[in-house]
Image 1 (tube, rainbow, N blue to C red):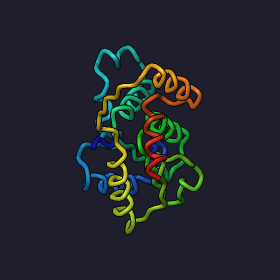
Image 2: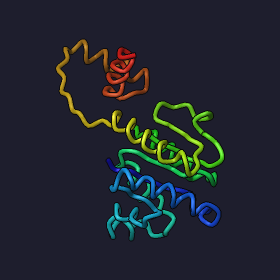
Image 3: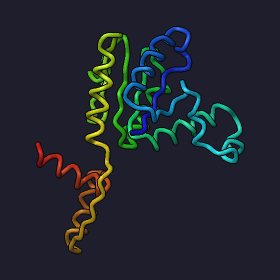
Length: 183
């Protein structure tokens, strides 16, 4: 499983110990981690792309967007609340990635209601179990099974119509029906 981990650049002075603790805990469960904290997040862009983007902020933003799209899950340490982190969480949710936002101050899942979003207030003693549970749950929801399907023209026409009405892809609509039926 590929994990994208990030935290606020502006909160580094105040929260670096927490960032390090979260990263170290993630590394206990997964080695395939992309993160500004590890310095490997820019590898997703080649030199030509970096030259085209020109300034460091633009390069940083495009690399993170691409890293999020290539990750299976996203974990964000949000103790230092930062507009950019909220935007990155939204990008991940829009890309259908499970997101875990960790804070030493509050559980953001009480404010953000989305099936892909999990939040937790953590400390040194509960962090391990929070990350372990999130990764276990996320593994179940990662879309890695392909299934081909034959439809009649009438079924395909209906699927096109209803998926547009619900503003979902056809695949997302079919998955929602299966999930609904499972409940």
